[in-house]
Length: 300
Image 1 (tube, rainbow, N blue to C red):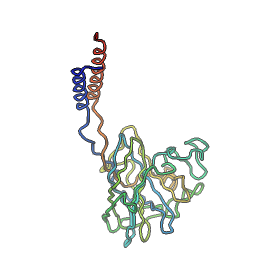
Image 2: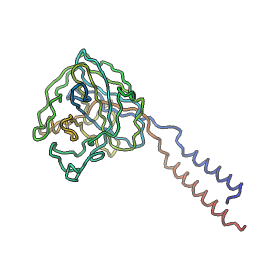
Image 3: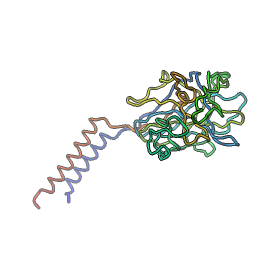
Image 4: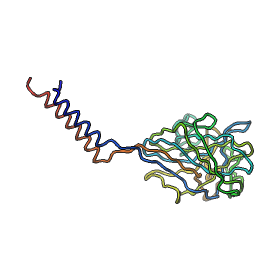
């Protein structure tokens, strides 16, 4: 057993070492795909009031443990409609949270309903928040009283293969509305590749999520180095659990367009100690080990 003077010395050394590497606070996190580009508008709504569910997803990447506290997303709302509820789902990338047995045991093997599941959202959501359950709050702001998207994917416009390529449902015009969401129960996510899925229930008509430039341009923020910005995907209750690519599968063409969707995320990411601090921490642990060894080696 260590003598008291040595024990106190070691404890002091440990305190100083840990204090030198402990981050003072978490670092702010912010990600944005940028402003709407007017190219595409895609339905995304919960299944309620006799309407079937539609989900549209776009991706983001986290490089560390992150707490998401708020988000924004922008879409079209028919004039005179009122927002009844808002939900946000987080998905991981297939084959996570998915039944890969449906794809003959291989995550790269196409299912019978869609051309591919590679780089799609998973079968089921990892986590979700909604205003009806009190886990998020939201406010809306009208950015423009009249905004037109050149093409759209509206209810009834999602079909399994071989009929998935419809060219889209054509131009659509509505109020351009930004939704600002606060997660009263924050999302706690580890480093990974995710999809963000907002859903809006209106009392009349459908919310259509507006596209953003792909690749991302200013004022959007770039993806972390080494990661890929995936295109947006969509599905309805009839296609579930599979997904279609909005551009490649539904619009089609040679080459087919690809889309992001207009959203942002804010929160905090756990700070990572600098390499020099990690070396100091290791040296401190080594010093503790040597002191204990010497203390045990002294004749009694």
